[in-house]
Length: 152
Image 1 (cartoon, rainbow, N blue to C red):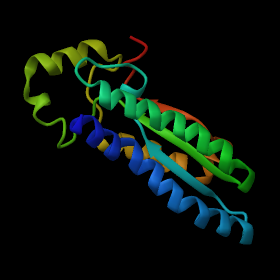
Image 2 (image 1 turned 90 degrees about the vertical axis):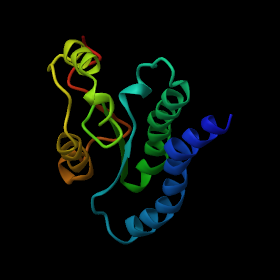
Image 3 (image 1 turned 180 degrees about the vertical axis):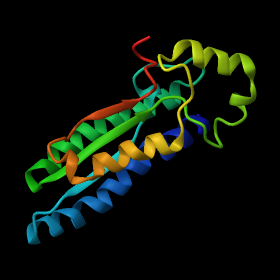
Image 4 (image 1 turned 60 degrees about the vertical axis):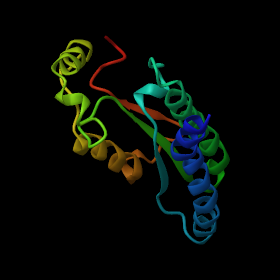
C-alpha cells in the first residue's frame, strides 16, 4: 500500500497540487493581458496501455491524462491551455539499467515502429511546442511521443 501511495503522490498528486497553485496565478495574469498561457503535464505511454507489474504507475499516468482534460475545460474560459505529453521508452537515468539488458532493448526495437528508444530532447521539443503560441489552438490534448509503440 505504501508503494501505491508513493507512486500516486509523485505522479498525479504532484500534478494536481502544482496546478492548484499555478491556476489562480495564471487566471489573475490572464485578466490583465491576453497572452499565451499554457500548462504542459507529463503523462506516459503507460497511461494509455497498462503494463505488467506497474498498475500503480499506469493508473497514475492515466489519471494525469484525464486531469489534463478536466483542467483544460476549467481553464479554457481564461484563455489558458492545458495539454499533456505521453512519452514512450526514453533514455533517462530511470531507464538506464533496463536499457543495458539486450533482450529489453531488442523488444523495444521490435515493438516500436521507429525501431529505437527516444531521447529526452525529442520529448522536450514536443513540450516546448505545446507551451508555445504555435499550439495556441490546442487544449485538452495528450500527445503521444512513443516512436509508434501504440500503432504497432
